[in-house]
Image (cartoon, rainbow, N blue to C red):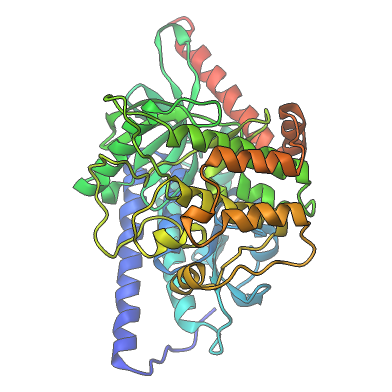
Length: 491
């Protein structure tokens, strides 16, 4: 479908658009080339590509779906909340949707052959139909078309869609590369700094286990500050030890990038649970997740250095995405990538804050000195969202949200019970000294408010709600065993 010619009100506006277009093209080319050169596969390439392009155009969510002859053979998503790929995959152009957002979808095609679609969700409704955004999305789709073509061309096939069918049936969308002693299986997700893959250890005698392997994105691997931050995270993670903290096994360098090997958690992040289609969360589930996460956070806060003194650790980047709810009912706090220690080498520049604006404390938003009570505030925001399905100070704009966290009074939503409101209100006090003194104290308040589900109850509830995720993880285990069997079999 041919788009109408773009018009710009000023030269500056046109220059900004062209710069954005070039940035998308350059970034997409870099990440796709890296994943293809390192044999990480189309799924891994799509994961990095989608995430980085979404961040460049300030999207809230994104998806890419590639089709074979009989339907979708590859789907990757990024973003917050429930993302309805089935509903939007056949959209073309811009479609206003709920919560004041717009989804922009472009086709993936090779000549007259349609291979699927790619879409981004942006805040706001656009009076001009979002023509500039559509132009960017079309460009992104064209770049991805080329990557799909390159991937298909690596081996023979009767037609592109038939080749995609063959690849999907054979499981060849999984990476087949190795980083050090780790054999990569499939991508898990991508953030602003790193990509996480499911991998298995390759040990003598066919003994192996699944791990989550986190690697620095290629475009950042030469950035000295990023590498230092990454290594700080790895070294810190090796110190942390608690049932509610993710375990770090190993870190090093391989495949042209630094990596961290950590515990692979069979479960889903809390953001998915909050917005599951089963309606409001049971209070016992909320109590179980929050109390366990707070226990783990308290252990991290109390971690000591080699000199026996507390490290003064503050997570600084807590969100529902960083709380993993296991299918065994165990909750884990993860991603200490921007954690702050008293002796950290990676220093935040004046006026620059790290973390997610939606979950910052007032003192973090204003770049003041912070301590463990800043994380308590963040956990209060997560508790508010879990009970209400809304974010306490969300203004649909990062700067305005931070200003609201600092200045606006906390508004009580309708229908929230008094005991829960008392916990939220205390955790979200503007002054740190008025909050819970530590995460353990807040955990006890949560348990006093509602009886937490037992581990097996929480695990069963989440497993039933996310059967596809359970099935995916079973497939990873089967793949690991199959590969181990091949490695240890007769020559």
